[in-house]
Image 1 (cartoon, rainbow, N blue to C red):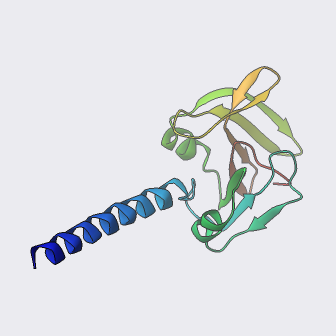
Image 2 (cartoon, one colour):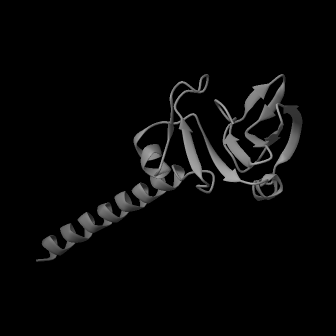
Length: 141
C-alpha cells in the first residue's frame, strides 16, 4: 500500500513539473503586442515573403518559430507604445507620409543592427494608422 501511494505521489510530482514547463513554454510564445486590427507574424528574418496574418498569434507561435511580428492600430499610438516598451529612440525617418521611429526596448528580444545602431522596436505612424513591429516591420505599412 505504501509503495503504491509513493508511486502515485511520484507520478503526480512529475505531472506537476511537466505542467509547469508547459505553462512556461507557452509564456515565452505570447504575442508581443496587443492584437490591434491585424497581427502579422514573420517566419524569416531577411524577407517578408514568409509571413502570415494571424487571427490567433499564440497558436501560430506555439506551432512555428517566428523571426518577428507586428500589429496594426487605428490612429496615432506612438507615444503609448514608446512608453509601454520603455523604448529609447535610436533614429527616425519620414517617407511617403509615414513617420518611422526606430527604437530599442529592454523589454523586447534580440535587436538587429541598422547601420551600427541596435533596433528591436519599429513604429510607423501615418495619418490613419500605427504599425508596431519587432525587431522591424517587414513588408508594407
